Image 1 (cartoon, one colour):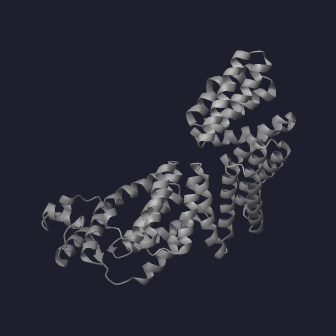
Image 2 (image 1 turned 90 degrees about the vertical axis):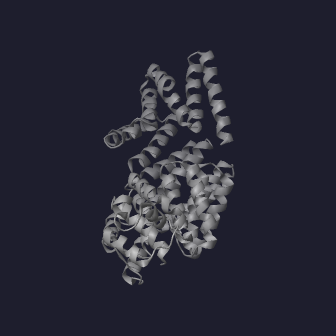
Image 3 (image 1 turned 45 degrees about the vertical axis):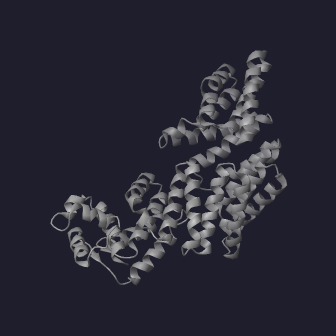
Length: 427
């Protein structure tokens, strides 16, 4: 660790201590000279650096600390959703205490990985705060630090559902790979993230390419859960380009791996996506079979279970099995009532409107059915840019209006269904 690097670490600790440049520099160096030290524009003497560190209450550790190195690697390796969050937090707090009063070559990498830590805990506010604190130090990062900086920023924007910005950061991380010391497993993880992002952006050829590149590494490492997730991504992409046989083949491979490894999440996702595929094909019986298997999965999150339940209600209504549709609609209502206590935006969104629509349909309140769709649900779907559901619900309303003899109004919603379908194709 050279003297210039120490200057950037001094800046990092000053910000963590909420100390101003004036407070740190007073009686040691001029304000302008401290700024040059912190921004790596000058090579300050060891004596000055030591005085600045003393004021910050930290020490410079030149020697490689094996304990810190091993503990950092152990913590970095568990920064994934599948690991126990309590253990992850205990390891973080232990490391933080070890590193709080010293600066060494692990300091920056630890701070960068803290972004990922907060993302895994779903504390995106703290993740953003950490990103803002590190932002001015980006130019001082080495290649490996730059790789993780861009990758974790990509993770942040993925969770914020700002997928273009996520893609931009993932691509910047990819550009650094050849210059940084990044192993194949980590590169595969980045390629997997790139596949997911291209999938969200409906860029199917790129999604397929990155999923296959990631899976080649996961197969070599016998990481079958990641292989299953890649098969699901491939299934979604092939489904979109209408290669349905290949889509079904990938979903079934994912399902096989999910069952083999007793992974409930993989089993749910494959049944859910198979249900959606058969629904789009107009094969309601197969769609119902897979949606029914999906909701049998244990420990599903509220939104996850509602996704399958609401689609199941749709399909049962389509084939005229109204009693079963009512039973599943009742389950969906119960989950939504529990969820509204935690997530107001969730309660007021898609699932809420969908349940209202099918409650009206199944219990014969057709006047309210029309008003919910025209006044609330369809405007909501337009605002969200949800063209897939716009096609479905505009056509549903148009059919109802046509049956009621309101041909002029029905034509309006048939046109909306067609224009929404055109937008869907363009995506």
